Amino acid sequence: MKKWIPWIGLTLLAVIVVAFIVNLLVVISIPNAIMEVTITKKFNYPSNQWIFSPSATAASKDVIRPSADLLYSILCYDVSQHPLRVTATLSEYSSISGFSMDSDNFFVIDDNQAKSNPIEVVLICRGMTYQDTTGKAYVITAPSPKGILMIGAVVTSQADLPNLTQIQKQATAELVK
Amino acid sequence: MIAVVIGTAIGYFTVNPVVNLIPVWSNIKNGPWSTNFSIGSTGANPYVRAWVAENGLMALNKSEVIYLDAYSDDNGNPLMGNCNYTIQGAAPVARWWDITVYDQDGFLIANDQNRYSFSSTDITFEPDGSFKIYLTRTQQQGNWLPAGNAKTMSLYLRLHNPGPAYLNAKTLQTMELPHITRESCQQ
Image (cartoon, rainbow over all chains, first blue to last red; front, side, top):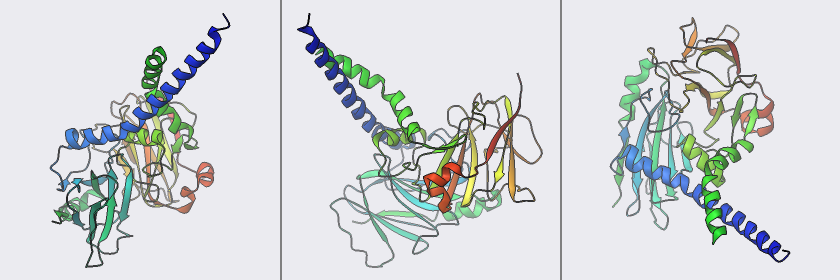
């Protein structure tokens, strides 16, 4: 009988270790899986192009807890081959931000912080180099070759919406080849 | 071999409970409101990161926005769609803020007014600078946030460029945040 006790103990320990490792591996994979589904299935936008969305409503189901007070511009970036240069006019209380495939917010610059307006951001991949000759651009290294850029502009009142929509559509994006 | 099979099963089927529990344990709480400073941060642990991906993808880091959520009233009772609530307090110190209500699935609640939130730029303040929001199914005078046909609800307070007191866990835990009071309920 006593011979079995170490075996039971070892088996229990193995179960706990395997459970912990499996749990952690699945948890680590969740953000990547959700970003992949969001980019390829929910958004399904062409890469490196701004998509201008109207304000979220009750019909908006792409993202949990959307803000109804923000006008979103979304760009699914792919900088695996070339740097991406984007420009955007930031209206009051608005920001441009980037999200890597593990869903981390790897940069955010708001209208108060921007060193120029329109703001200029050049997104590069790890290992790439980009020489900014203008001195105005933020050169940012993306942690993953693919991900999402977002501009969120606060809609302060419905009367401002036409003007904000016009500003929103001034955003540009081009691969630097 | 049996240990691997059992361990794999336990590890896999405990993902959701663990993802929901661990971030909650590490949350900063103040009454019904809670937040996690790791939201959107590149320094977030895998469990917080997974929770954010599932519950608020594309959240900005705390330097830009602090997200405070509330699933209950000041007495700890869940926010029910068939109950009437007031949300009131001093205006948060932030460059811009809004309070949004969501249904049980985390989506905006359909209503004839298309009113899903109130913000610092469109709310009507009280003469003393405070604010009061009515979260109810039936129309109210003033800042009315329709509860629509939601079964349960949650509130999200977004603080854009929050004041320094909100960026410190100790002060955030003790400072005055909007009160959520259940006034009455219908059957």
